[in-house]
Length: 327
Image (cartoon, rainbow, N blue to C red):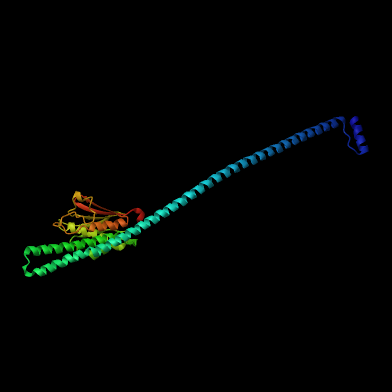
């Protein structure tokens, strides 16, 4: 009945009237919405607070990291400044050392030039005088020169000429130590073939060539080295049975000149590349102890290790080129 009356009043007034139960339900819904709104506002405030806290922590962490980074950069800059100072001091030291070495080399070159000039002129004057006076003495004596005196005069002349040869070798040896090098890549086989054709076309000892590839060297000087080494091998092999010389490569960086000659005694091993040192007597083989010393001098200027060894019945001369210098 109450519901019907409320509906009638709602129709008459044009307003929606609620029954007590509906009003109570609606009130509960409103209270629930207010509760949820309050909870939502509390959550929103909490989120805002947490966001502010996180932002503050992020700002503090960023500021702390920035301070640390600035400290690291400052420390690194100090290290860089210290390193630059060390490099500057080292550069100055290197420049000073380089200048000192250049001055020493210049002084040494000047001394060598002076010594070469002294040997070429001042040392030769007495030799020329000795040689001339032997002829003057022989001419003064005429036909009355005793045989023994004639023999002595010839011996004086012979030793004078030998002294001239030694002086020439010494001057050349000094020159080889200071002359400029024109180092270029060259075909090793072609260079050795040229040496053999120019100097050993009529060699009494067969020469077998087994070489290929390129090395970097000053061609005229290395041709001189090869010529001296091959000439040495021929000299000590020519009187042996079935002599033979083999020029081969044990590796791309190692050249070997092998002969079946008489070799050398062990007591000469330490001095084999010493200028004027002979490993055999004059009655056995001719020579002044110049060839090996000259070859070693040129090889060392190319940073090539020259070795001489006796392996069984063979003499092996090896030229070892550092791999860093190979083209």
